[in-house]
Image (cartoon, rainbow, N blue to C red; front, side, top):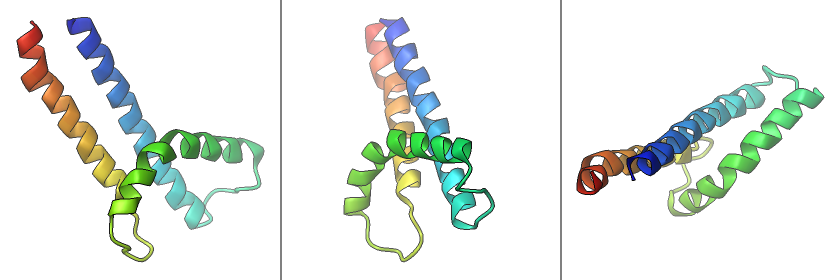
Length: 96
C-alpha cells in the first residue's frame, strides 16, 4: 500500500512541475519572449495547456476577476500541497 501512496505522491510532484512550467510558459508567451510561430514552441505550449487546463478551469470559475492576474495555478499548487500532506500525515500512518 505504501508503494501506491508513493506513486500518487510522485504523480502529484510531476504535475506540480508541469503547472509551474505552464505558468512560466504563459508569462514568456504574454511578453513575446518566445516565438509563438515556432512549431516546437507551439507544440510545447499546446501540451502544457491541454494538461493543466482541465484542472485550472474549475478553479477559475470560483475565483474573482483580478484583471490580468491569474492566481488559479497558485490555488491548484496549494491544493496539491494539501493532498500530499494529507497522504503522508493521515493516510500513510493508518495503512502502514
